[in-house]
Amino acid sequence: MKNSTLIKGTAAIVVGAALLLGGGGTLAAWNATDDAQAGTIVAGDLNVAASTGEWTDRDLNPIDIRTYKVVPGDKLTYTQDLTVTLVGDKLAANVVLTNVPTSTFSTDNVTVSPLKLTNSVGDVAPSTVLEPVDGSPTQTVTASTVFEFKGSTSGRNDVAKSYELGNVSYTLSQVTQGGLDGVTTAP
Image 1: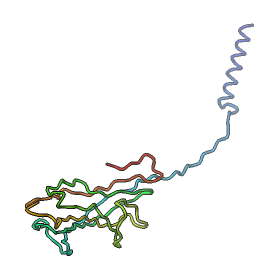
Image 2: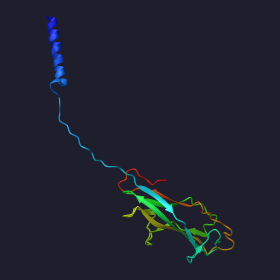
Image 3: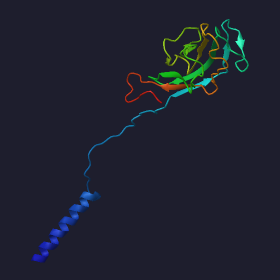
Image 4: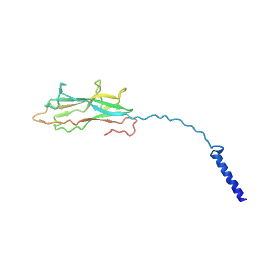
């Protein structure tokens, strides 16, 4: 009797399992899927390219800085067009002069102005921070700086001095804009 009960119980378990595993019914619950259509994330661009610059004297006459010798009272201006690429929402960048050497001229006799930027219509930028221009990935700004050998220089002060500017460059660095978490000015 025990064998017959054991056989009947085992047979009932096998038949029940077969029915549950697809032999006569399923354990189905409804489900559905759809594409997320999340799109593609694309990075922007930040770049600066400098054209050939030009030195001019106080009267805006071009000079060849390789052969020109400054004297007290001279005021020389260096201008250079920069093509700046700024592509990105909430993107802004600061333009700075880098690799500026220490002058051998006395600071009492010479001044060098901070970098000044003007846009394509001649408006002076209120700072050196640039933002993208609507409708164009690039913009041209003119960078300028003024070297003035003061007329008040007396005696033989700063005779035969030099100021080597051959390694000066422009650096464009992203700056923090509202809505950008954790972004700081790049080094």
